[in-house]
Image (cartoon, rainbow, N blue to C red):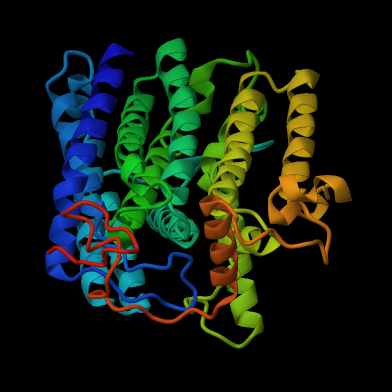
Length: 445
């Protein structure tokens, strides 16, 4: 565990320290697209954050290769090198897209090629544990097609959810934390060496996300872009493929009967890992809903819109930060609920706990619909959102904070207008120098 923690910390530190220089490079390179109608942010923000995340991945693999225990992963398995090859290819495609906005079909082809590169180096699904049947061996073509499909779906699920500051990195970090706990348990508790690469991938993925999050939380100073979202999606899929399709369920010896009984007993363990869409259920649901919605309207499934789950949370009335925290809550509930169920599927307390937390989540989700209203005598002492319609306005000598809040509320109703990368008071302009206030719109580049 100490070596895993060291690898995680090194990955996070390298990612965090490189994000600042990468941000300046993105500004100089012009990787700051104009505001689009579907965007939530109001100021052009530099992208290419995936560059720092990729070098964090390289640093984590390099450190692990020189540690006493983790170095055995590189000696006994070719999966770390397969991951690095696929990650380098998908990262390069993402960097080009962040800069030049390449076509969606070209990106899809690049994702399939990156998955194929990993398959050629041994990172593939060899068999599937199916309840009531046992292990079903896959042919080379079946394993290749299933692996490529799993990688492409996971990459696009993470990419689709990357719409709010800190959302994608936080949700993937939560999913990778739950994944790490399971993979570590399979490796250490049951002595299955085939689970070691997946455990390493999960630790490195957590470090990449934790190192990038301080720069990406609202208000974000840099976006990860497709170079980052596709990268972390590929790493998450690689870990799931490694442990799901190559670890024999019968080796866990959770059941003393036949192989079919062993597979049936370990269904709570393998179903969440067979399809990473269960671990990242929220992005997967968003992906499916987006495809259905766009196809129903006669649009391309790759056409961008403002109908994602995080957009709907903002329309309900949640603030930017609260919408992100709600998405975190649901991701953690599903990921760690599946993890707890895999440890002890017969415990009724786990089911009751998940149901109780789900009820809390629904209340938080609908909270803006039940905004309390202050009584008439207290309307002068509460923010405007808690006053009844037609309440007496605040006197002219309002506090500066109240005035700013009212101006922000009025600004929310104004139509969005594209802002060029060279406009004043933009995040990119303040990337190198100190942030400028409204009274000093000077740009320092």
